[in-house]
Image 1 (cartoon, rainbow, N blue to C red):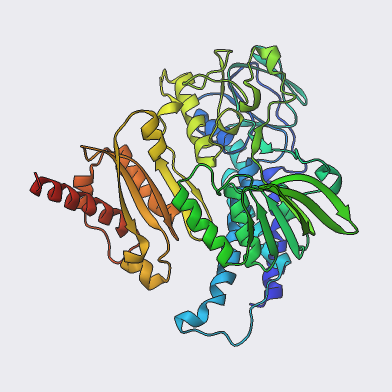
Image 2 (cartoon, rainbow, N blue to C red):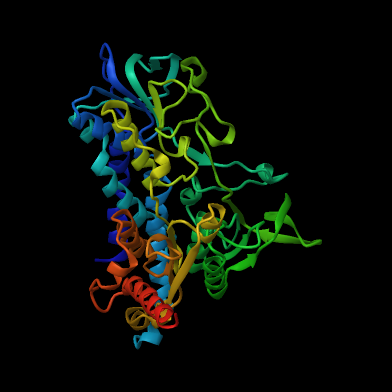
Length: 496
């Protein structure tokens, strides 16, 4: 199949995607007299809650002002990971000769085809929770703005929705610029990055969190000149320093220009070039780019919902204020996902939405503070974490000990040529109870799930050390860390 045919085939998926996430001729249903549950926002949280509620036999109204799937499907996790995958393939082609498979000509990138491929993937995934499929499940799906007018009533296009319980799951959006002049100069965010028809030659990424690092590396792999500016001394502020340092070296090795401890003070134009004025340790510098990607966090979507009319309190930049059970200040209204949670991840959105339904209708007393949440930054190598960091344990006065296995000592990582990184498991000192783990590896996003299961099941380091893993696998590093614990314990016993 030719490249042109592939691109044409992918292009036909976009109308299909639109039909699935926001059908053009959709007619909102006539509202029922009263719903058991009204959900505002049909992203990952809202959809998960609606599907669970109908399985419980509840009458559900689901309201979405934009497109189904939220940021995750439309502009976030799904499209970004599709583009990252393409960029990774291209980067690995550059190393083909090291594996005994030299290329006879330099591979080229067609960004229009990259986007077409991404959109085809997005359309396929959209089918699992499409508008028609949700309606077939018995969910009353409304498109348009929703606003609370009373404690148990919403106004939507075409009518009013009365409810017994409600869930607000309106998500979050990229934090806007706080850099003088940048609004005038113009910039893109994760919401608009993949709308560019062509790639600029030079892009400047402001923000060294997960998304900023992911996109900086991916765009560099796609051939752009990339500079990333971070006002902290390291990337990934939530992660341990050695994990951030490995990522920093990886970004530098692939050609990303790195500016840490650097603050952007002003933006301006010189001709068609965007200039960002920066400050680092009393040194001023001007950085030039054709485009700026701003990635400085996300803020919850709480505006225009009439939350005050429903007696729902807002907690400043944190979004909707909820208790441990995800109840708002109106006991019959709950919130879930990015609109109320500090960890703004798709898995957290889904988990808290399901928890809210349990607590609202099944008499559950589940607490979101008890969730064990893994997360990952999808660079090369990936950086993943679950549970406590060392500083978390110190803050709680928990004695902690760490066992580390370097990936360059793991057979499969060596054979794959992916031996950068480590598996680091934290235990409560004096026990074999696992408190948390950080993994830096090419497959860290998959490996961290094994640690999550181990921790949730209460499996000890002693038990883990005796488990047989498939060989050779990169996840064998987790077992090797447990064996290091056993060796350390035996040595301590011999020296007593």
